[in-house]
Picture 1 (spheres, rainbow, N blue to C red):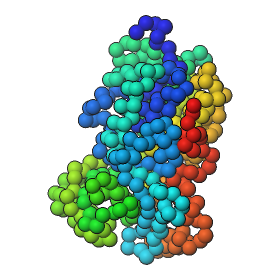
Picture 2: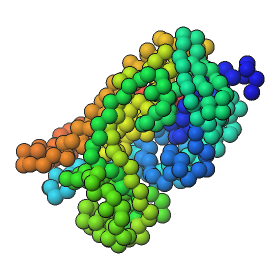
Picture 3: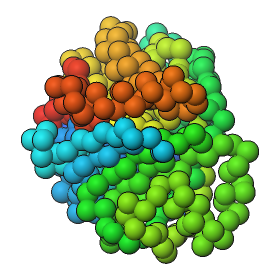
Picture 4: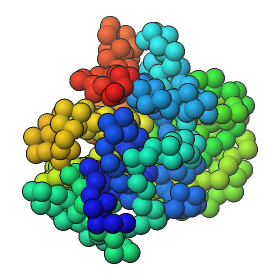
Length: 404
């Protein structure tokens, strides 16, 4: 690559679901974008495109519609039309219904591998995007004029803006000197899929237990994806269970509302950590997605929050397309995203800690809260808006408005 070709408008560190979504969202602006991703697209260890399921909110649906990708995504997605929230062993429960909210679905469940394939295929159709893959950023430096990175093969790239989209353990975030606070929940999420005797038919469950939340989501072929949060010390023994023993354990946690469980698939796990970057920007650099925030999966909002980061950044860049790393642009982005991120981080963290506590006073409070959720006018609608990602000030793409 010639020296004059090494400068880009934007360098995106990370080619996972958030990084590729940002690159594709920027395509209508005709900016020159480089995406640097260390793991080959088809590699089995690519964490962003594995067999985990992602619940896409209404605002994420609108965003992909505006980007022209939704038709292909929804063909492999399963709609969530109802959400049932309960506290194991207690009488209180709550529900949200799409029909009551005037929408065809509250969200959609899609397998990460499928979503990743759609995004990666779309990248190949955009001439303004250069992929460096597999490639690792070995060094990054920031100056008033440009952000510069050095790849593991010695290639040097520069850009008006460097975007860290390389996940919870972001290497680029560390390189540019942004610190992060992390708090472990002492839990691991066991994930997999199974076949319930009674199909979910668009119904998603969130059940809180003393060990942690348990979620059951509808996916294709009448199967259900589960996210089972267990104590860190119990995770290895749970993963070592036989299929039959694991099904029985899941049945004990969830109950028999959907009949008996069978045909469980491969299980895997990952640690649950709350992480928050102390700031979202640096000189000619910005954080998006899990590099900025890592949420507990209880509310299934982590990826959706990251997509709103992407949409907000695109909005800010639209206002200053000649310099994507302009200091005022980044200041506006940070102020905009801080509120949304703090509210959602506080909500999910508070939810997990409230339902993780034991003792009569806390349980009574939870029972009252769940009953009030269903009985107090307007409360369910407000909660539904947050679940669908439609609360607060929304960027163009999150409202379904194309950038160009």
